Image (cartoon, rainbow, N blue to C red; front, side, top):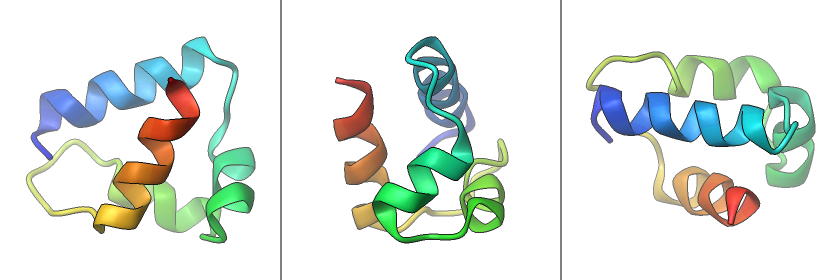
Length: 58
């Protein structure tokens, strides 16, 4: 994901009132790990995490 895509995903999560702790519970990933994945850089995010977060904001 690009930094812009990550930023947009974080904004969508915030708009739906989904915090990282809640998202982490559903994805079975620690909130701290999600926070690191969503840092606005070019590091990749595992596909299952991206798919899970995307599904939450739809």
